[in-house]
Image (tube, rainbow, N blue to C red; front, side, top):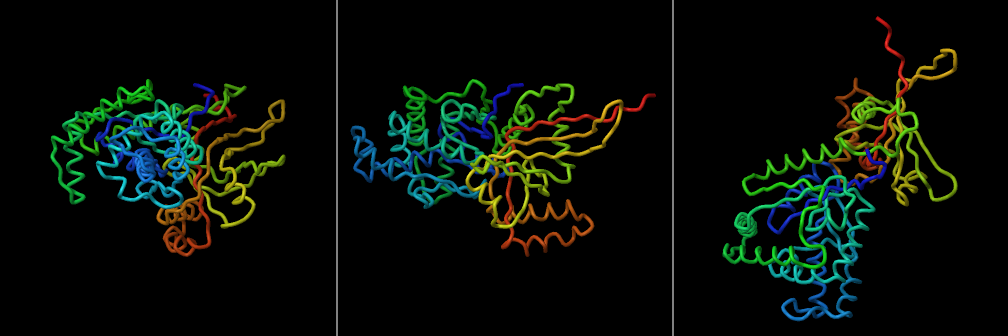
Length: 396
């Protein structure tokens, strides 16, 4: 068990047409976190370079073209899962980046060291703000080497060409499958042979050959890898009292049944700030609600790294010394406002059902009424530890 924290990021790498984009979105939807489409970042940058005068069939862009394109590509994210959206200068990127020509232009500029350095910094900046499912070609090897779960998808060039043809036809466009396959093979050669960050699986990646698998089977394999990575996630630090350290599953069970917790925050001054919270654990994340403004909301907007602690089973005891039986769990992670209305409604229903189960039939109406004047937040755990001193089992 390592003492080093690993980023709460899932990477999905692989060659063009391996199904990365569709599956990454689906995994992000399941986990309730954003999906970062790194290919869209390269395509957007390539189009900005073309607007600045770059011809992808000619020589490389000049310093001034690169400078203008870099300045124009200020990226951000909004939404989670299927509603995740990459924004450039605050506006969602459009369908113009999804053409084969844009893909070829992106592949041409992706080999440039200046471009890769710029996108690496931009992607890591987004990873510092959000837990992510990040798909691309070097997410697990270069961009997020400390990601807690890395997946590499592969498939034969012919199968990838067939999948791409189906996508084009679904969008009302047609193409020659032989040309698509040739383009895919050419892109593979470029990606695998480039000097900077060549396409390859990370040493600790789970490799999945999707040639003979449907989308559901691949999704199940990825989620199995995520669950296994979560189960092996490290605690924050090794405890001094190792005899009181809880197994991860026991700590998770404690979070599920705990009644209240304390949220610790750093407001950037010399004074820490902590508040008690009602909460609910669902699908691996912790939800809480509060007023839409106040000191807590202001702190979290500036620094979303937090510690959340729950204590249960407390019982003062005297056994030749004064002590207390207890069980506790501590989560270190990051907090994000829930903006998706359906997720927000579901969280409010879960909170109402947890604290007033006898009135569960009214939870839906309560959630509807509270949507406009209540803020809901999601804590995404990155580290989890548990500690307990329990009453000894009776003899016999």
